[in-house]
Image (cartoon, rainbow, N blue to C red; front, side, top):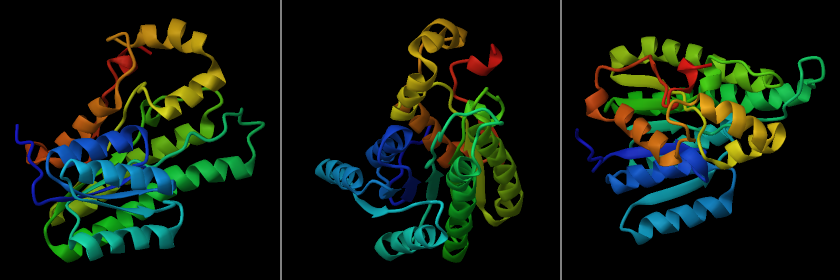
Length: 257
C-alpha cells in the first residue's frame, strides 16, 4: 500500500479536535501539506505549531462551513498558500440538541442541517471548483456517521443531516468522477472523540456501556486515528477505483443493530 502524500495538499475541516485532528496528524506524517479549518482559532494555531515542530507544513483558517463566504475564503486561502488542493476532508459537524420531533425547535433543526448538510454542500462546491480549475484531479472524503443509515430517538436533525450526506456524495461522484475527482463518504461508528463524550452525557454512560458497546463486534469504541487511516486510504491511489460509495469503520456495530 502506497502511503506517501509527499507533494500533495490536503484541506481538512473540523480539524481542531477528534477525527479531524487525527486526520491532520496522519496526513502530515505521510508528507502532505495541510490547510486546517475549524471555528476554534486557538486549537488550530496549536495544531499547526505541533505539525511544524515535526517538520510538516500547515496553515490554518477560522471557518464556519455553514457560511458560504467562509468556505470560499477557506478554499482561496488554500490556493494562495499552496497553489492547489489534492485532497479535501469534509469533517466539520455538530450533534446539536437532542429532542423529540414534537419538541425540536426550528432553530435547532436549522443549526444542525446548516452545519452538517449545507456545510458539506458548500465545501464540495468550492473544493471541486478549485480542483477542476487546477486540472490535477483529486479526492474528496465526506465524513458521515453510522447515523447516515440508522435513526435514533431524539436525533432526527442529526440523522437527517447524515442521511443527506449519502445523497450528496453519490450525486457529486456521478458528476465529478468523469473529471478525475473521486468523492466518497466515511461513516464511523462509536469513536472516542469529544462529541462521543458529549452524547454520552445526554444518554448516560449506562446506555453505552451496557447496551451499545456490547453490540460492537470488537467490544470497544474506535480511536480517531483509525478513522483517519480509513480517510487516508480513500484519498490514496490504492482507492483509485472507489468513488460514490460509503466505508463504514464501525467495529461491526451496524451488522448487529
